[in-house]
Image 1 (cartoon, rainbow, N blue to C red):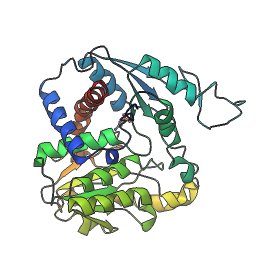
Image 2 (tube, protein in one colour; image 1 turned 180 degrees about the horizontal axis):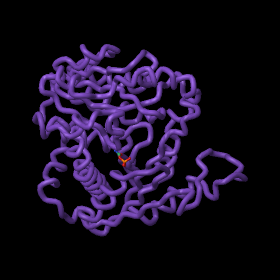
Image 3 (spheres, rainbow, N blue to C red; image 1 turned 45 degrees about the vertical axis):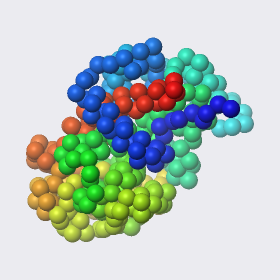
Length: 340
Ligand code: CP
């Protein structure tokens, strides 16, 4: 019997030992950029949405390890894809995920997928059916490049925190703060930040304007399970001052409130009333000399001030750089386990 394919869809699917091993390898790769771990290997990077960091770091990362990356944008330079099983394909889609994933698997050794929610119906988007469709039909490992979670960002964030605080992050106060943005954004990075921060045993505060901005129960449940295992804690707060006080880490992200999914005009007034959640120096002064980060892209003076972004406390650029190193480590580990 063939072993199940090991994918990288969510950090929650990997053991803590596996995640630590990826972070250790990424730290080594940061020191020694070139290698041959992907010699003769290839990855298809399927982008349904825009990217600067993910695309650049994956293409470059594959190259630096002797491999080859091929970018595909369905609906632009590749055929539009159908994901519904049993669909009568008389609409826009020219081919089905069943063929797409199997054909790509005959060419390449890994498939990366970026597919954001459609922002109309959360009960549909939360099924993550594009990523799951690839994982279902592919016969090679699939990597999540951001769908409704962003596990590669989690690892880059974790590596940046390790670099500042050391490998043992237990007992650190971690604030995941909602910030204003003119549009309702994906909850993926917030889901991921909550997941990895609790996994690493930190004392996590989820700071958001109202209970409507609490994350989907799947990710709240993961966080609670992680806390039970790691010994950290999880608190939901709507009070800026107490949340920031004595924090070691402030991680900012904007996201749309799940109860208003698809009814964004109703959510807009709540969002607009909380522009003051922007990260600024006065809030950072409440922390315990804490660091600030964000996954990027970030709208300056909307999500965080210039002063915060340009301060020594800001580790967002380190985190962005770490995307390259952690993703190389993930690809190398996936290929190693496949060839073993
Ligand atoms: N953080 C992140 O994934 O950046 P991109 O959207 O530019 O890839």
